[in-house]
Image 1 (cartoon, rainbow, N blue to C red):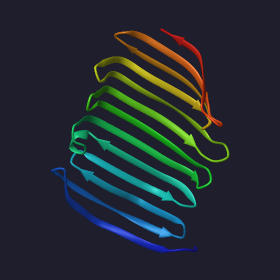
Image 2: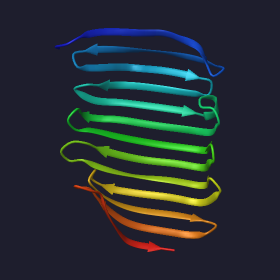
Image 3: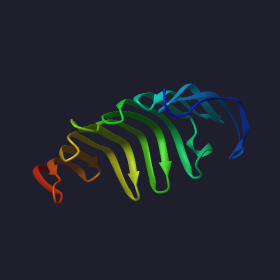
Length: 193
């Protein structure tokens, strides 16, 4: 292989983060244009991050973040969160997948009994972007929502979007198509109250 080569083993990371013990370990190897890890692990109190796989010529990278108490990491936040990420493909055509699940998540004037998202994207010649974001029993400032959801699918330039917001005021549904070129354009095909 051309380029740099090396190996780093992290036997023990220790310390404190926001009053919680911080621990970690892992290993990283560098060969040419690729970085590989059989596992990087960090934990602070009830939160942990694990990364494993490779990035460079080809991507096969997985990331997992879990926290049963977000407030232990970020001041004035509450709830639990699980985030899974995958990076596949190549530098020319990378593919991303993200899955997020949150329960009793709160920050500032926002709170969500359930917050989840699934997003998939591919960049390059055959780009695509699709996903779904859902919030249940949410409070946004002084507005209480029973449910808010958005589904989207298409390319990075052309998206079809379905949205729903339901609360004490009733329910609003929206179907739209959005395109970009010189400027963004949108067409609302259906709005129901």
